[in-house]
Length: 225
Image 1: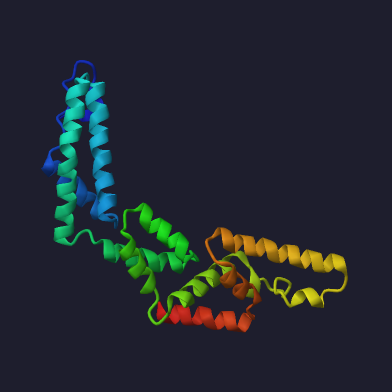
Image 2: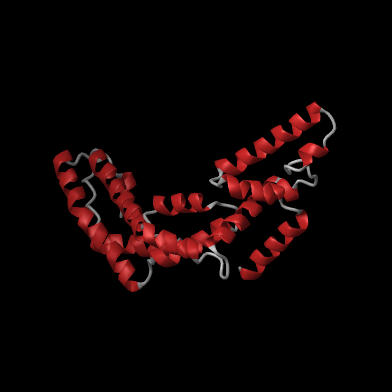
């Protein structure tokens, strides 16, 4: 049987996907990827868009195609609801797992919130996921730990191998030029953390932290993972 991609001017327009076809597409996607209900709806909407392009290319009437696409929107929602009912889609579980992964990669609470919001996770679900992201950690401790992970990746603060980013180092430098250089370096490091979504208080605490304390935080994060 010829596929829709082989449709030409003399080929009849392919039929629109029905509920069974969309359900099959949903199951195939979920077998490979975790997603949210919103994310699954987007996947199915792209499946319908591919049919739409193929049908128009095959010469189908634009009005008829538009009507079919509109009629499929509630079908997409129903299929996604079916997957939720089956337990194949769980926004809460997705948010918890993704938040854990992102925090341990050095993403700030703001960055995690934005990531989950873009995937259609509701605000209350996002908030719960961030509160429970590391067992035994308060939200403030989680934020500090994530900032330390980023600092380790970027070799900042206690992971820089030198004390020049700590505020106390300014007085230790001899000469105005060296002090200004140290201050400029600290400002660049603060900028890295700020652009990643970390507040000034967290960023300064990270940069002023001694390597031994930072190591204890990293060990605690690993033990609670």
